[in-house]
Length: 460
Image (cartoon, helix red, strand yellow):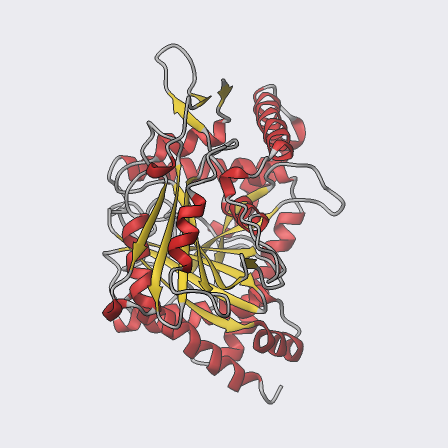
């Protein structure tokens, strides 16, 4: 048996029917040339033949009244309860119909009496396409790790006919890294309890920065949590029911803007999101007079740090003050992000980690007590950027055209946005509760905002 880390345990404690804590990946593929129409159905049958299930896909969670929850190896894994086949009707074979179907698959919690993962093979998409939807509990892996696993199960050659399901690949190296991460977490907790001096100094320095910002004696040193704009349709008590959509911008177009304006990918992407969110909120009758506040995961590794385990924090970032000029919006966001980076680099990573734990705990308590409709949220939405494979990948000769993360919702946020790069494209993936109206409209506004930004910088 293996004890859960404190981080993994948190995903189970926070999980409810309305707010399940699993992540997923959606792959859209096209049948290989000259392949039969039954290609996806045969693929499903072949998946079922891989009965040797490797860790962590053979593990179940075991709760006890006398000890911490633990992972146990299941006596057996019935693939028929984990691998499924679906066929979309001809009148619902487009991308948004697929996204609507995925949203329904994403709603229910995974059955804790079994290993916490599923694979759905979905056939019947237009143009000879099919999809794979991988779903697993967040305690198994985070979004980045899941992306790496999915890439390992694919090939960079169309001539490779070998099938390598996620659960059939040995991950001894992953297990070793995970054990080290758990040990590091325990050591980190011990260091904190025993009065780690650098952490205490870092937390004190960060607290001072927040206090100065709160008294308006500094500007944009760091955005304050729980003081975001007045209540908007983007925030509130997370409820059951999900919707998903996505839009795509080519990296070539993004790189052109970056070169013209000396900006980063994050600058450009957040500028488009900021413009799209403001336009979307106006449609819903909300005219903001102050910046939209996002939660954003940040890398806390110092240069040369190659240690295993997670090294991220989640901080609040103020986007641009409301403006109709996309170029001004780009510069405002660039200024805000540079200040945030300077702040992060000025304190030890442990301080940001502590800050992340404390703010997340407060938000989770509010959601658990059903107070998210009353108390202010940490931010208006969460935006993360996950780098994906740069080259096209294949599954038994079938080219993967899109690779889309389907995330979970943080407390008090009805919308989560993940940026994902794959094979020359940047995908904007939006997951939300059903309470958020017209989610595909927001995705369309991202494309509109990008076009407006292109026009604005063309003469720069």
